[in-house]
Length: 232
Image 1 (tube, rainbow, N blue to C red):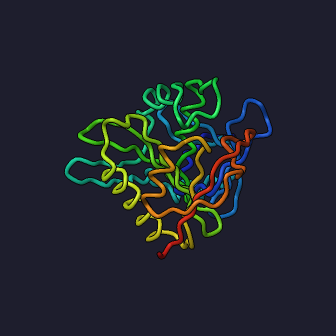
Image 2: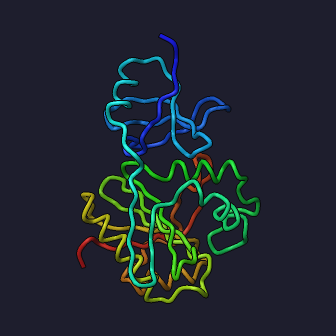
């Protein structure tokens, strides 16, 4: 059978793994246990090129549009990240901020891949907006009963502390409702006092100031680990 391109719904992706070939994007593990290599097309969709009948049938029978998570209040909006956010994230990621982990930034293709891989069965990345101004990101990844929360505010003068706290509460409530977890974790750089104040204000407890975490498939950094139990 001739190989064909098939869309890979993100709701079927459990995890991304490094691709063994330099031209590859990643290998994904699917909900049914199958593996396949994937790429991102110009419209932001994941796809694979395959001639495996079982894989094609599974992907086509379980096709669904990307899940959209949306929270709205009078001024605050939290929505799923999408392909159209590429230029904004490219600008944010190439500014020196308290979230920067190197001086090189990211090229446009890396930002596209970051957005494309941010949504799986166990992870999601969302844009934070206040008064229709996009100003930061919040995301989660669930691993072995732990929900890892990542919060990045890039336009700090455009958001109030109460709106940041509401953002955290909404996402943590959503994760607790939809996943079997015991606690929340977040890791920030040791000199990131801005994020530490947010975490302490929201009852996260400091655990470790020398905690190793991955910022990419290849790059490991150290930072401060904070935790909050699901209850209390």
